Amino acid sequence: MRRTFRLGRIYGIPVSIHPSFALVLLFVALDQRRMGGGGPSAFAFALLLVLLVFACVVLHELGHSFMAMHYGIRVHGITLWPMGGVAIMEQVPTRPSAETLVAIAGPAVNLAIAVALVPILVGYGLVQGYVGIGDYVAEVAGGASLATLLGYLVLVNLMLVVFNAIPAFPLDGGRVFRAGLSALIGRERGTRVAVLTGQALALVFLIVGFRYAYWSLLLVGAFVLVGAHVEGRTVRLESAMRRLRVGQFALWDRGGIAPWHPVTYALRGGPRDVAVTDGGRVVGMLWRSQLLQAINGGGRDRTVEELMDRDVVTVAADESVYDVQQRMHASNRWAMPVVEDGQYRGIFTAERFVHVHRHLGASTAWSGGKSGGFAQALGATVRGWVR
Image 1 (cartoon, rainbow, N blue to C red):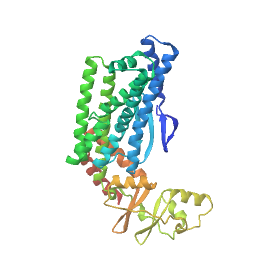
Image 2: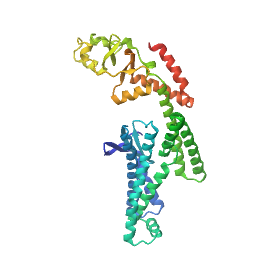
Image 3: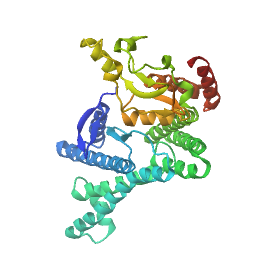
Image 4: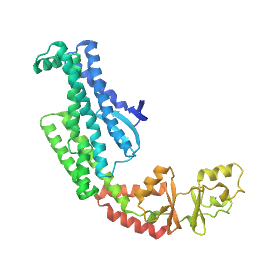
């Protein structure tokens, strides 16, 4: 189930909640029943505590988000799940320093919350006449009170800091660990070491959780195991696309279309985005939407030059598929002419990227990360039939 419910926006960042979050309410109810009830007031207090904990989780994700936005990374939103929250970013920073700061920004927020709550808790204790730590512990463990609320929030935020410090993907500690390794041995090899470390820790969690019936530890182990696998596969795919040159996958498309041709001439092979060329040089783009609008509006006799987009963005044939896709996404253009020494060499479209991504994804899934050989073979095959 992928549908989420929007709660609102915080500084322009959408915050949503997944339907499975209802499991939290069920857990609170069952836990209250197991502890002997306590009536509606006890349930309301437990629910308030849970909601405040998830508010701290939102602040944690906002820490990541604001730091990512500082580095120019778009944040699509924050989603709350029963196991916590996730900030959905356009991409993960590739520079080790940036990745480190984005990763530690979340736990830093939790540490700041805990530090800010301690004086309030101490002040409450002084008002109540507490004389030692034992009085605080007794009050926190005694039931519904302000001290209980503050004490648990301090403890939860400190636990979030410690938990996220574990050097395993997808936890923040795993990203800091990978960033440090990337600075020493490169991003791809650093990711491989970090993934193996995370998987080893996940197996330890699973074994201990199964042996001593710690079901929460079993969930954490499964979470880390899957997260490490996904992160490793993502970086392998990214590295493979960085090694591929976009010129290998550019469609020649009959050399584009001339500015003086009628728009109907662009319909050869069906409506599509097509490069406009003059003497082998790109002078514009005729977008599919413009073409269809002109045809449906009775403008069949108009020339390509009248409709073409002159604000053309070209890419060099030796640029990587990954970099070109990032430029396409940033500029909101789903087709880009490919040039070599100023001469038109073909067009790279979103459909071509999906084709390459799909085949590389299948390769990394089956080959355990040895995608370089497949990438070279794919590039050689495409070069044979593109031109």
